[in-house]
Length: 255
Image (cartoon, rainbow, N blue to C red; front, side):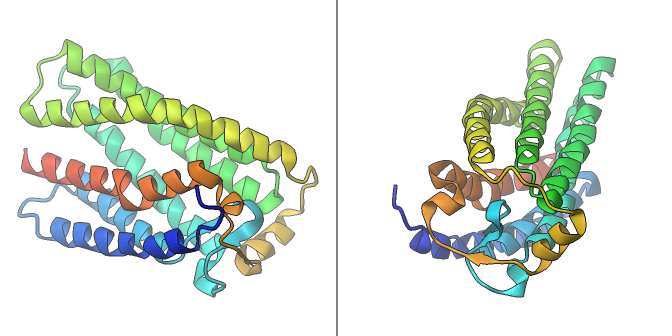
């Protein structure tokens, strides 16, 4: 892996056009289901923005030293997009839970609650510079997709499903098989970074000011989380998550 991500970060700009293309496609749907289309549009719009102005919360790392690279602005937008697309995924579980199995619906709402808890952790980490809180945030994401995968597996194996349901449940399962082991590696990486980082925390007002104004321009791979960080950015902003949420919106709207 290259020690300098400059060219790779420039290449991320292509992701903005990919997201815009996906947005245009969704806007032409004849019978959109707003429960899935609106979350997808939010996620895709924020992903396009993040491709143009990538940053990393740890150490306030940015590619472009520009106000639009603000950690605060990015995190604010990401808060809406993350809650939106997890709501979309949880909605899919509920609409395909045709037998109205209580614990399946419960798991779907746990996903929404947990993503809200993770937002609290990541905001606290940004404002206080307590790096351990990033680790707890990501444990939340592990819980979210463990619930999503478990509910999807049950519905796929135990209930009569339509073709649309089969496709989406299989997508959930395939993602879970790949994501959950990767997230364990990600958690280990974050834990190491949190231990090596500064043990001191800051007052939230200072943290807020830093999140708005402080930008450390860098293209060093270590500042961007190395291979794990790069794969996360590409999957989250350009390929896997954007295409997935768009396909969910299309399939559910067409059923």
